[in-house]
Image (cartoon, rainbow, N blue to C red; front, side):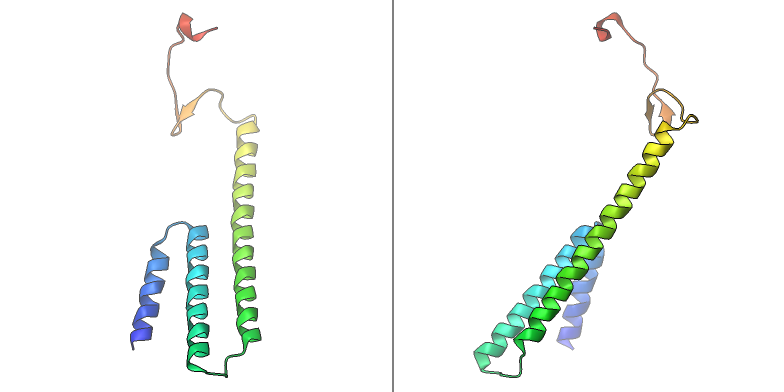
Length: 114
């Protein structure tokens, strides 16, 4: 029961992190810490049923999934930047300075021109 509660609390904490990259990194590091703690405990009590190869394989798998997720985030960011550049460079884009979608209105004074 307590492990289920702890897992639920960990999951709620991770879901509260707004940044996906940070959330993935935190989740990865938390799971890695728990696995390390568990394997150390098994060694301390003399449990020989723990297969180190499986543990290393699972850590490598988690690292691979984290790298794939980070690559997806970068790809989405590049796509958004490309779309923004296309929109800004199009002939339909209004000229001038805009702040929050509204044209910025200011008057040029002689001291602004050099």
